Structures are given as structure tokens and as C-alpha cells.
Length: 251
Image 1: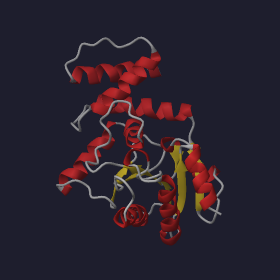
Image 2 (image 1 turned 180 degrees about the horizontal axis):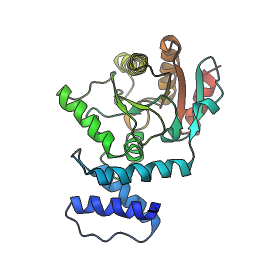
Image 3 (image 1 turned 120 degrees about the horizontal axis):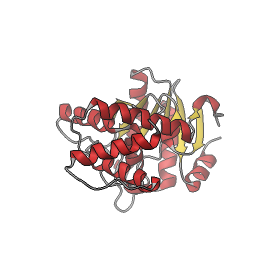
């Protein structure tokens, strides 16, 4: 089965779940957008093993073709700390950190540009199912400043650490600052408890949650330096602006 065959199979499966007889687009770009959209909006419900097998093969083949960056190929900027600009879903390390929302179920907006959407898209539908089970057992929304762990499924890393950062309305308060620092501490603590040797942090709470980029980076660097212990930490940035901020903060 080719990648096109797998993609069409996955699309048809998800359309059939919805009772839709919509035709599958013939163009590859449109197929990719439709598949991502269907995965993004799918609720955390049981799904067949035939779908999961095809999705695993499809996503892992896509990841290999797109290129994977291994932490072993990176050069630290200071002891045990790395700065890397790129797509966090292509990073092979112990765990990557997802800037989640309080429902912890991923982003339901089709093809949205947030990191939560990307991580759930390229991990596959089992990530949302795992998060839903965590939340079912917890019985309430995830508070800001804490962290949960799940397998990474089809991502090249081993685990995903999900943390909810503070949402900023106006200026960041002392409470906001402490909650953001707590996100980093909670993820590092969870990594140590699970024997995870390396963690890649995204720019938690910036972007959709509106935490000022430089202040967020200062908190991240200060907290990681204080709390990382033997854990190797990658500061993952996507924008040039954030790369420059972290480059100036790190030695």
C-alpha cells in the first residue's frame, strides 16, 4: 500500500464514521488538509485496529520522509542545554512538551497553527484517547502549572509532557509568572520520575496565550537552570524572534 493509498483509506474511514459520502479530493494537498481536519475534529471515541495500523504506518513513513532531528546531533549552548529552531514534532528525544489547554484533549480547530494541533495531528488519534482517559480519571480540567505524561505514539520522541500555561489578559502578573515557572518545574519533575533523560520545551504560553515572549524566555531559562539537574533540555523555538531572544539569554 502506498502513502496515497493509506491516506485515502484513512480519509474514507473517518468520513464513514461521520456518515458522510463526501468524495475524496484527487489533489494531494487537498487530501492532506482533509485528513488533518478530520483527525482534528474527531472526538476521543474508540476506533478500529485497521485504522490504527494504517495510521501508524502512514504517520511514521511521513515522519521519516520529512526528516527527523536527533538530540545526539545537536550541540549544547551551555552544559546540558540546547537551542534548536524547528518543528518540535520532528525531534527525537526523551520527551517533548505540549502547550495544552485545560481540557487536555488537543486543538479541535481544523488545521490550526498551534503546537497542540500539530502534536495531536502527527501523534495520531490515540494521543487524544490517552488524554481523554487521563482527564476521565482526574474528573476536572487541568490546572495551569501542572503536567501530565502520555506516550508519543507516532512522534519520533518517546513521550509527550502536557502542561497548561497561564493565559495573559493585559500585563503578566506575579501569579502568571509563578504559574509559568511551575510549568517548567512540573515537566522536569515528571521527566525525572519517569526516567526521561532529555526534554524539549516549546515556548509555553506565548502565541495563543499571549505571554510576552521575552519575559517567558527569561522565566524558562532561569527555571531550567535551577531545576534541570541531570536532564538535558532543548529550548525549541519556531520563530526567528524567539531564537534571538533565547540566543541572547543563553551563554
